[in-house]
Image (tube, rainbow, N blue to C red; front, side, top):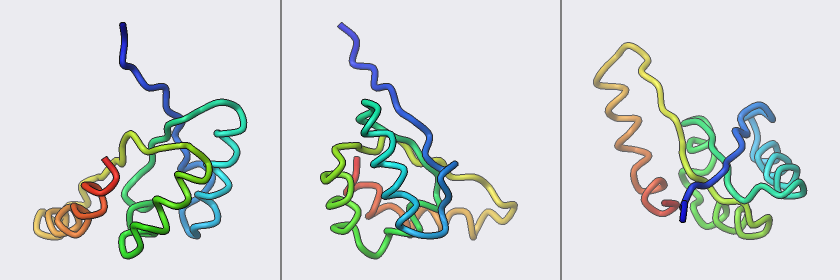
Amino acid sequence: MSNAKLAYAIWTWGLKEKSQMVTALKDIGEIGYRYFESVATAVDLFRDDVEEFKDIVNEYQVFPVSFYFWLRGNLQEDVETIKKSMDFLAANN
């Protein structure tokens, strides 16, 4: 039996405001998706409020499976970005 999770990429809804993620989760939840993937910018939105993020995903019953990070050409800054994100990522695995 497969444990595969079908996820929808939600960054196309935008990543400038938390409300955009809320709309994305509501929309994909309404059509049956239970998992999503996004990018590091989404982590930035909620890094300082893990509980708010958990409340939102629990409300819509749509959960993260991955957050993509990208290299920006400065190794030290890239490593710091990952380090700053680890607590959030660990809390939402």
